[in-house]
Length: 259
Ligand code: T3D
Image 1 (tube, rainbow, N blue to C red):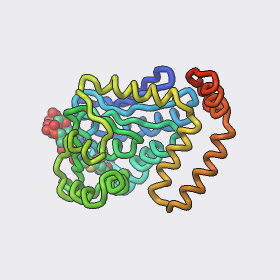
Image 2 (image 1 turned 60 degrees about the vertical axis):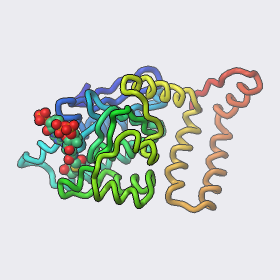
Image 3 (image 1 turned 45 degrees about the vertical axis):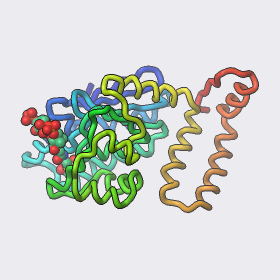
Image 4 (image 1 turned 90 degrees about the vertical axis):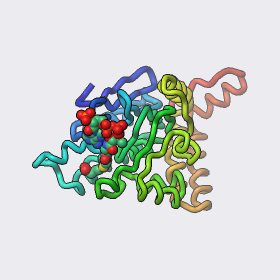
């Protein structure tokens, strides 16, 4: 536990819990620093194959801690976004392990952006997303302007960002903002089951898949086809591919090692 972030590693699954429930897990400088460091450290840990990001209490994350905005020595917003928020988003995207956002309650402002930057999002029935930036006279940040149109299309992204109404879990599922909605009491069990399934998969192939899915949003079909051929060359030369073939022949589950 460091400064409002709990890091728990259980075998191949790491769970990061934003842990300032009285402030709806709003992001302070220490939490942002701790989150970035935890993600970078997990990225380098070959024993960790899937990561869950969630919040303690009734919220996922209420975004920037607005109490910090009253502090005279607070960094200018441009600096804060560039130096504290953006590295977290880059870490989430560049780490090889898939990251699951278990959205347990309200995700507002940069808290919503954090969820958008994860590879998968599952939500509790009472979760909601609020693009709270406009109410503060701010623009969506931490990747929200990039992720939202890709997740829900440009028209709906504009509505969410400009109107700012809360999106409940059922609507988030309909829009494709989350891939599953489950009763609140089952959220963490579902997230752990999903993480365990991913953790049983081939880590190298999954890391390559994660990268390919991200690049696919900005390249044309020809580039994607060529990219897939190259990645298949790498995956096809891995011990995990040999293990997958052996397991198929021997009619048993594969035991992947990430090599
Ligand atoms: O500034 C920069 O560095 C630039 C980067 C900006 C990125 C951003 O994230 S900007 C957006 C910041 N976030 C917000 O504007 C959200 C503010 N919060 C809310 O709109 C509402 O709290 C929620 C919609 C999230 C939840 O509403 P509700 O009614 O369920 O809860 P509540 O009663 O408003 O809040 C409960 C407590 O959490 C309350 O404290 P209290 O009165 O019980 O002592 C409230 O002040 C506190 N809280 C909620 N959000 C924040 C917060 N405290 C600090 N910062 C917050 N963001």
